[in-house]
Length: 290
Image 1 (spheres, rainbow, N blue to C red):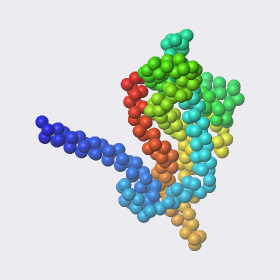
Image 2: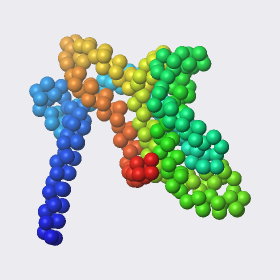
Image 3: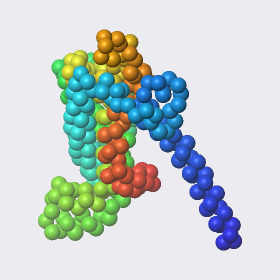
Image 4: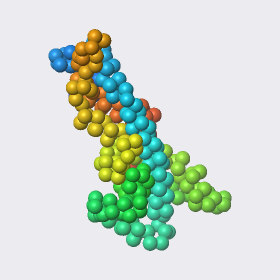
């Protein structure tokens, strides 16, 4: 019996290792292509390790400074948007988790209705336009203040916390906001971290709304700017002078695309390890109690 369990574990480890390699290979290949020379890319020699190390693709992307401006805009969009999302999601989920709230069932049904039926693109655009929020980040932040799904997940988590904690704090004279800030939120770090990561990734990858509501080129997000740069790749962009007045190709479209992918996911990869522990626990709690 013990021997059978050992074989099962070994087989399970081998299968998981194979799945991990299959998952990691495309990502490692993209990173390797972004740091390889054009000759190695065109020859198909790049696998999971850079061949003839080259930073030309990255230099090409950031040389004019537009990408750095777009990245700064995306950081602002992500930080403020995520902070607003978490603030309003908590302020909606906490009172709705209390059965004593009058009209609770009606409010929950109204929020659930928005998950099933949406207004659509044109009504949203007319609303944002009427409010005078075109070409403003508030036109992105305000219509997306709360995700109904994330609010229900957080509400379910709040409902699972012992009511005795709040009752004892109330006996000591604590008010609702004080109980929420000093007792409920410190106990909710796993699910808060998971929702923060969900919101942050959504804002970091924001594309369509930016394309619709933002008109100024100096306010575009990183994803939109990368897409525009990919569309504008031409021979003049891919060639540089060799110092003798003769231009030569130093990068390839594949190299530029790979470098743009790495730049777009790098910040999220840097943040994820710090939230990974809370993220796994928070997702499990939300899936069980949601």
